[in-house]
Image 1: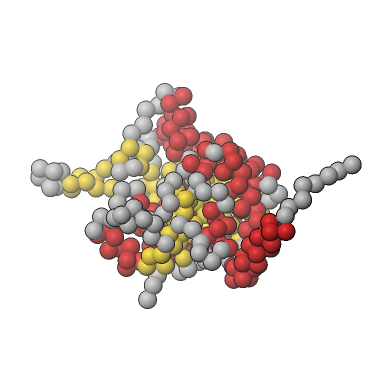
Image 2 (image 1 turned 45 degrees about the vertical axis):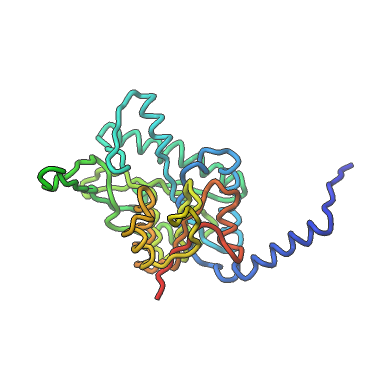
Length: 303
């Protein structure tokens, strides 16, 4: 004999109200594409990673087309340490020589990618893992950074090795997935003109893919609640022009700058809205997508 725990009438009504609130958003975003950058603490926490997978499957189930692009910096660092390969960083980017890029590709396209695919499949979805080299998805070039000598103010080119930036996105394979029940999970590895392998920042890769697909949303999961003002309070909405002012007066600084720049690039290329969300918050993607007040910071083009 089976028994089940009965909820109180108030609990059932709360559940019904939540579903009712979500309905107009389900209609609004049916057949739209969301590109979701998955990384940070959410990837390392078993409960959060399971909830993330459930959220992605739910998006697909209600007719939204989720495209997952993932990072993996901490996991790469651990593997390099295990293999006694030293690495360094410049402006937050890992200097990637020929030995390092092999490990980066192995970790990103291998263990991390397949772990995410397995979580989504276990939650009832049909996920397939690919890298930017598959289907010639991400063509890349060597990323060049410069720095000014503090004494002479002469600019010096920094060599980051096989760190790349997207040149073009071939969306054909992703469009094929969108017309099926398949959820793509993408490792941010690109290919160069001479067959080189490039390590690409996951935020940058997600932004480029969102732009190429004309996505309704670019969602970047981070380890902070969103963009904060000088008092440490969350800014729920920003236009591009407002974001530029906040960068200029250094309200937006450090690691948030490249995320905002990625969002602005996507918005300037037909992405409807970009969101910076706290990946440590349970079901944060659903809160943003299907509730009136959303979560985190939304950035949009403005007038």
